[in-house]
Length: 205
Image (cartoon, rainbow, N blue to C red; front, side, top):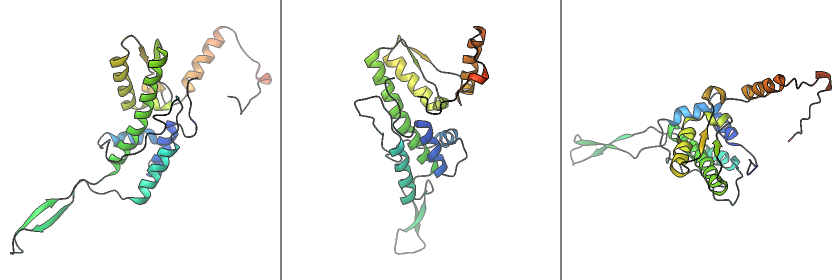
């Protein structure tokens, strides 16, 4: 294990920010959907632990930053028209468009990009240090299309001999399919445990 999350994982951050916006659960896909038509640099959200000298992650600060932005700001229309008098004659006016405001799409795009920047940067840095034969993107956040494409582009550009594997989106939502496959191979070897002998350990690492 090279690194792990210290508090909120990436998926939790997606879901909690989506909840702040009143979006349905799971929030990751909802944020990604809105982000497709938003500006990734509309809001300068932090990239937590991006420059730390380790491979750990922490996304609670990003979630808090998103919370404070929503507390202190309001979403506005993309363009706002207002009238400007051009001469002494009040009937002669010009339409002026104000600077672009931040809308919900921009907010989601900015949050998504912050998460992706950290995940990709740390993965590429680890690959540069350890020269793995294969990089696997997995877990719920691996369903994020932009993350999949961004990581693939970076790997192809910088590690031409490294394999890049990721599950179909259908199997990226939870671990049910993985547990079923693991159980299948144990069953082939007749490696069973009587249900009466199973003891659950909720603190298992």
